Length: 437
Image 1 (cartoon, rainbow, N blue to C red):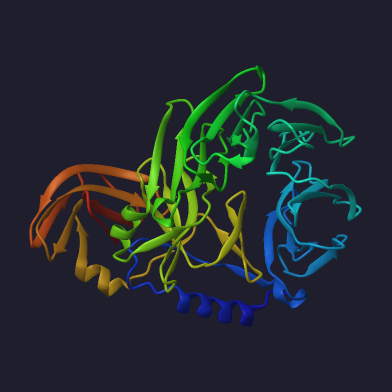
Image 2 (cartoon, rainbow, N blue to C red):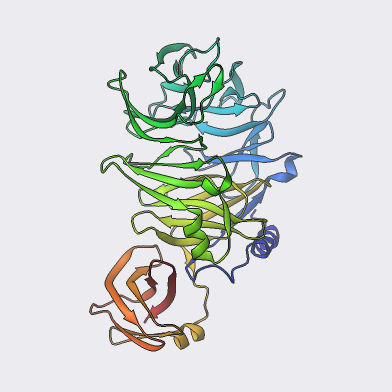
């Protein structure tokens, strides 16, 4: 049974905490279904992931649970931790093993079919990743007497350490992820001096697992990286960087083939939204060209969840969902889990047109392969047309716009549907929707 009353109430609540008047005029990805995990007890939700069969494994406080993705009902609970919280879950590709961080931070591993905890690591780790074939686990280790080195490799069948990756001047490890082909590790590492962490040596490095002797430096940072994720095609990595103060936080996207980076900066987002953006959330890949992340002002009054086009460096969609802890995707469905225990199922290809038709027709008319666009300012901007999935349909180049009526010639036939006209310059982006009938 789908809890329609709950869905409506929560959707209204989310809308109330996410004012839309200041958001750029772009499509909004709509929440399809919501499940409230907070009925299971106190504490916070700590992420949710799809299982191979399409159901959901969610973490609530110290207990993993399997939830029916169609009804929202709990199918069964896995063993709960005797103490501490489980967070940041990872599931092996075959859906048989669950690995979570435990207060400490340590690790716990569940056998999902039986629901039993089968292994707990009672030493401190940075974080871990699992090889795509599910046979190995890579742990980043802090610098102490028990764990010399940077990365420990464990066999997932025996849970015994089988290798250790250590390099000169690197004695501390944090965020880690493995490429989809299992050939490359992306790791945030550092070094210590006199048992003190050296804030000027934090690096993101790439390790070729076919040649473990050397590594490649992506960049050196000061002082910390908070997340690490490969794109689904393995050609990019994205991470959240936090500097010495919140003014230095930004999203970093690195293209491995081109050896080039793109940054999403607080100041750029502040200019886009017209308010002071002070905080960013971890970026998650949806596909090779799209990430989603949160942006929040300060003091916290507005929270925006963005779907971002990496290639074109622009907002693709906005998502009505706040305080998000995790993102997962299966086929075209996104799964979001909020701190408060709300699960949102979103169709990645479905958007809602904000403006009603009369407003669209008054502001933007399409006739005979040309648009009549009204502007209240004079400016020069790059003009593009997208469909509602964010696909570029036409790039009309850079052209001047006057205060008043402007005619934009498209010079190509558009199929029946809803489109988005985007005009952007160095300072701002204007997006308007129009309908081709």
